[in-house]
Image (spheres, rainbow, N blue to C red):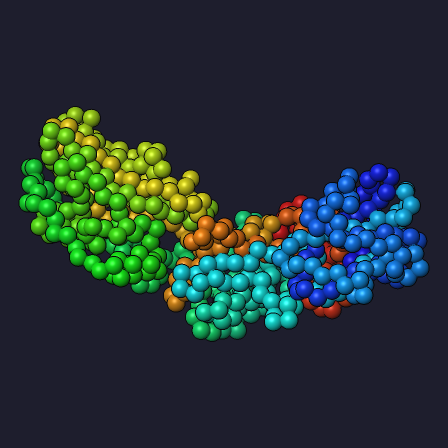
Length: 514
């Protein structure tokens, strides 16, 4: 049910257009109800998206003039209008005569839902697709995920994980989960920036954390989320004089299945194998060296790593040596991110044209040269802010060196990219970022599937009742027009009727957003 008044005018006729979608392929019913209507004669149409008032018949599905009570309009079940779930349609109410206006009430069949259809798919490393707007076998909506300004409610569904409950609270309104017990847990939302926090629960997969900032996104963790930092300052190797590569490193032998398992294993790391302990050929790093084939160095080559057995050796061969290691990294959306690594200017020519630099997408982030005064001082940790690249897109991280004359040597080890993984939901209901589950791995809310199909979870905020992507005066007017009625879409505290509390709830967010 929707009660409102005609305010928009086109070509002399007042009209209003309401976006909606359907939950199944059953015939729809949309009727102008005389009980809430002051307009004597209405005209009703249903159009596919987009609707343009200047050309109202374009994309039209059906129109009706007088199939309702008196001169009022109705699209009935007998009209057998069936629409496609997942698409946006428009119900347009206007008057038969130009200049006429007034209040009206629309009644809808159960399979008609106001607003654009949700974008419902997230991706889990271990569970596959997760549906944030699930439907029952008959097509009707179940208790899907609901986004409130300060919390989430409802359920998501995954074929391999079952039902995922977003919180124990079920009565809408303002709420904050304590996340202290099995009877008080859930996902909270910061109304200012949309950042999520807290836990969801799956009976088959356990807890899912929506602000996994407790993770130390360190080196070579592929088994779980609770990992300790891998950089060990006590293991710093002091190198005096010019070290010598003993020979080529011993290559690591792996079967195709072992290589595939390594690459597909869930990991809490942005940088994979940052300590280079998987050796060469490396499953994650692309390696290049003019003289050695690979700059990776380990057993059979040298023992001058910062930690573990393997590290990167740049330079040390003449008359010219160029070397690099690189890999593609995805930095979580909108979160602070810091790149760190351990480097040693082992032996230096004193010239600044011998260099080691760090690039991200080809842009230099940091550089050291053979004229650096830290030459010979051993390993030191370097940190670089890369928050500007935190956009959930792939970026090429590269460590690159050129040495002229064969004297200068740089060592590199223990690369990490620490990012505050988490999830945000903006005012339009777009989910971005990552949640973490020990059993499901990373859950990603937007990206590109293996077949290059983009996916995105978008669940409209409950108080954005006109699906405009914000909270505006129309939302306040729509809720106010339903005062005293049982309209579930506007009954934010779920007490069975639209009342002052519901009107105040949406009015408090007017111009502020969800």
